[in-house]
Image 1 (cartoon, rainbow, N blue to C red):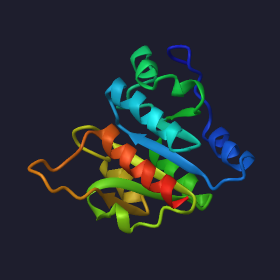
Image 2 (cartoon, rainbow, N blue to C red):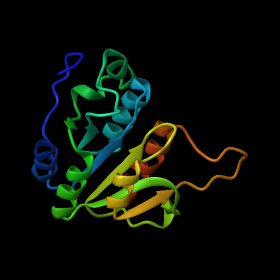
Image 3 (cartoon, rainbow, N blue to C red):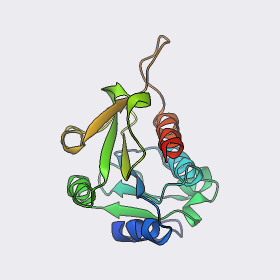
Image 4 (cartoon, one colour):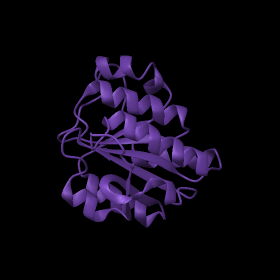
Length: 170
């Protein structure tokens, strides 16, 4: 419980999808440390129709006042769960027939991926990306093609693109 925001359980996020009669659409954050990125991702997740955001307890920014502000109030509407073991949580999601896709520079072009079913999109740390263990558990990795001189996007921008791709496929 931080900044007046109460964390929920992963089961609450999945129950919300079920209540709405929708296939689960979840965002998993692995090591996002910047509270502004966290808030921006929560905001984009809400706007794209995700059912919730899952954060790891370790190496991750908690929902602070800065994150709440950056979310433009989305944290008031979108469930956020904080778990002690992201790897185990990913396995739980997969056991519920949710496909887990990680953003990774070595992945397949996101535009070729089928994001129409039950999905969890994993966004990694601002510098290192998705951690090795979490990456190894994901069903697929997705990349965003880069045409300029730089080889990566800000975590919240990459998340926004992938979340809207999933929204469009749904």
